[in-house]
Image (cartoon, rainbow, N blue to C red; front, side, top):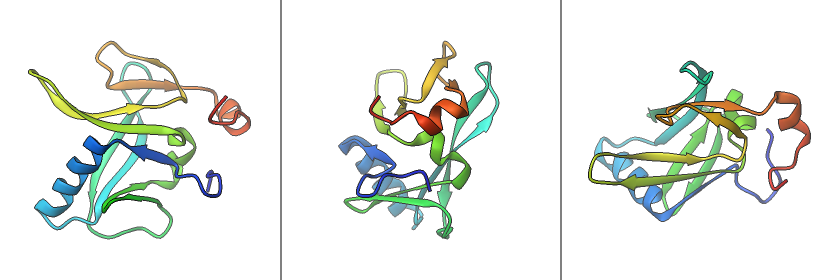
Length: 126
């Protein structure tokens, strides 16, 4: 929908690929659907859900068997994002490195994006 031919909408680090593959195998899921919704102190939050059935309108990113589906309304907000999986002594989880984010809350759970007009006209590498 908002993609560039030959370029995936998001990229996955090897750690994210391994974790997504583990989650898919655990309960025989088809992958993870990522999106965004209104909420949090900065205005928006990422969402992640297990996929049991692939929606034909989702953008599909598959790397070495790890599948991520991007909800249609989230595609322009997530284009160019790198998804990683990090583990520390206190926590583990997916981390989104998103070039479209202009601000985030202190805990990192809530984000603010560039204005939609900027997203539509600014190339992801700019």
